[in-house]
Image (spheres, rainbow, N blue to C red):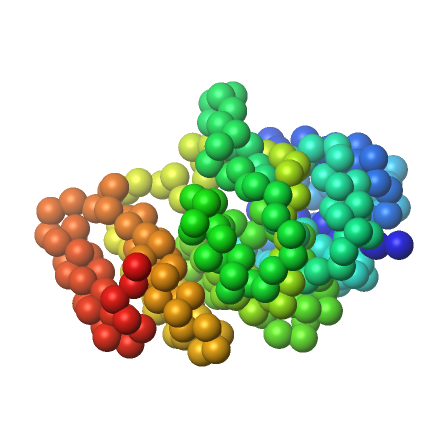
Length: 296
């Protein structure tokens, strides 16, 4: 019987954490644990978590000094007792049959990773398309990434996937500390899987709010974000090169889609900052085309 560990990094989420916890407790499949890493919250988040702990034995809460979301996720892994796990952001919530359908799919065919769909919610408006996924049978991670590109499927955030614990620990995956958009690293995780499949269920609700760290648009933070993206891109692309060494034809095919990650800062950078960033993008395009081929 599959046991799911549900990991929630929590930092000053008093407005949202109760909704998140309620959505998990309402799951129709009951074999799960909730692992909350309280990342040095200074609001009432911990009080709310303790209230739910008193009524729900499945909730573990680990307190730490503020370290950021990547370090928090890395810390959470060592507390997992389930054979499968998922990530949930504290300001998001899941739908009641998510664990049921994940378990049903795993009973039918075991695999390293399962992909599901999510709603994007902005100001109470729901977009079902951006994070949707077609159902697909088991394939290895590299072929799955090609499938995503072929079908216009957004492959990114961690909360779109259920991971096998042994697979994750065997590969010693570690998220990149102190960087925004650190979950671009997930594309490397996907590439290392020997078996991924997709289920046709909208299991997750991604709530985009103005208080999100990625919503901050002052000049200093945008420059910092741009530097983070360049760093993460270089780090991940070098890991992908090694991961794809047996299937370089697929990497050549998906490289243009992967490179779209670099476009994120272009909406907010201006003037000389934007020009300099575009130069950095061009340098990477030339360098990577030389290394990997000319893409699609």
